[in-house]
Length: 84
Image (cartoon, rainbow, N blue to C red):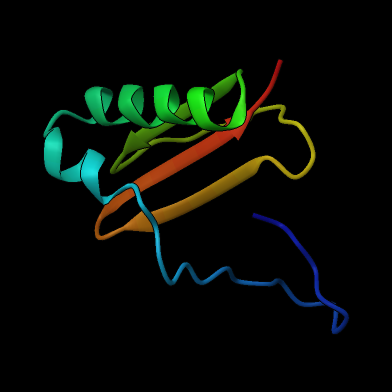
């Protein structure tokens, strides 16, 4: 994620709390975790959300401004964004 602060460096997000733990506890297969997160975000924040979950992937996506997050929970990366 390339966001700059006033010092010209990169800002590093620090997630203190997330309510996605249920997805990680309920599902073991990464595809099922992604599907659960996508469906929940579509319901709660209006469509169309896209979610990628895994330990090793590359991506290059177009997203709506202010609707993109890429983070780790343990060793699992989650890329979530809205587009469309």
